[in-house]
Image 1 (cartoon, rainbow over the protein chains, first blue to last red):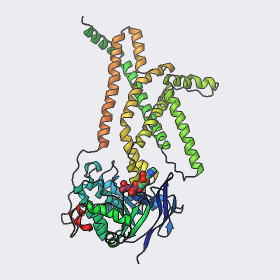
Image 2: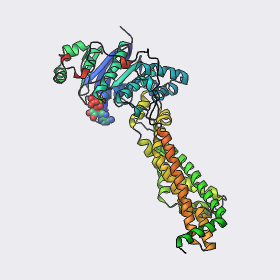
Image 3: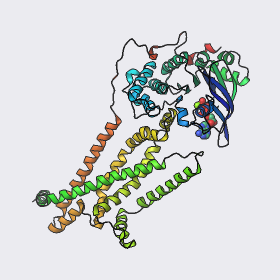
Image 4: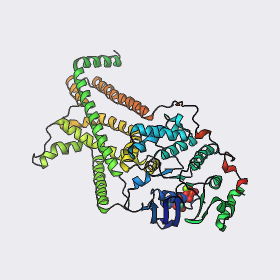
Length: 246
Length: 275
Ligand SMILES: Nc1ncnc2c1ncn2[C@@H]1O[C@H](COP(=O)(O)OP(=O)(O)OP(=O)(O)O)[C@@H](O)[C@H]1O
Ligand SMILES: [Mg+2]
């Protein structure tokens, strides 16, 4: 059994009196690739945003290496630097070049020297196939290229877990592949990831743990074989059948 | 003689005699406008930054109280100085201050009064512009920065303010142009700007329109040059419209070349696979 990185316990989130997440429990071990699937509005993004403390959970705890990060013991910014996040809308800094985007966090947050930050940024830009574009500004790139830079920016912080919120949903179909290729490569290298996605083939073939969410609760979870092969719950079967029909 | 050639020759004659006086006036107007716009922008940025400090429900009561107080004070400042004429503000500061404090507070330097009044005015307008500029930066930029662990201030300085600054350059230009023209109200305290020179010269020579024409040309020059320089600055901040690819070692494999084994390139279209 490998080391546990994250434990989500009884996590709930309300927006006003709207209960968006109810009593969520799950564990992420080192090297796990967890995919979160579910209908629109089921709370997948909110779950990821809570895990990264972009939203403050209403109750429950998020245990990172044994420490509850919803408490006062750890600064949210320190915790976030160890948990990377890749957004649907990229969120690259539009006033910086590709290279600067990948260096700024290392320099300001991790206090690395510019030379180290540069070397490290190049390493990850190379990994996502974007090292030729270091001088470009985000607006000069295609969606797929932007997302690959965003992945490199997150990787350059060398986080312990990488969260992806529908990283390919804003992309034209022909660019989806290049981003999934990068994610697949990261999964094979043992990167711990939590991926919210509508790409069922990715969930089935790349992840080792699938979480199916339905109106704010984890309806069913298990290995891809269990969820895609023998879904137990009626909701899961209905949800997956919609994808089969295409 | 044609009126226009008469106008021209009168202007030449006026310039020959009073050229240096006009230039002195231009210098004072330009100096006041630039200094006050600059200080006004600093005040505006300070107010804009202070009013956008996030205040979460979970913050402690002391912090909430001070942030609230700060916002109220800035609000009052903005409303009072935007809502009253600059000429009256100058009167209150120059004549009112010594009157109400029985000469305990008194400005003796006209420049100090003029700079204070115009800066504080510009600051009141800029505070709102800067706040708007900060708010209008895509919230995703803030989330992107938070997600890599940057603090509010790191995000502000490195990500938000550079973009907000780019957004409000036109407002800075506007404020400068307004200041170039509106500093003329400082005659009320005896500050002799470019327009005051005109009143002096026209009074002495009765060449009213030739002098007014010189003024028009002078004011336009001050504003056009500034517009041009701000455009240049905007372009520079915008960055190059193209970029060079950086060639690297052709042997390094990249993710771009990497394809999933025994899987279709676009898994989304894979309908069979789920059965
Ligand atoms: N900031 C917010 N304030 C109020 N309600 C919110 C907020 N963010 C999300 N919600 C609500 O929470 C619910 C879950 O939203 P969420 O974005 O997590 O869904 P999702 O599963 O990610 O959907 P999608 O697949 O469309 O991205 C929705 O009903 C949404 O309206
Ligand atoms: Mg979502």
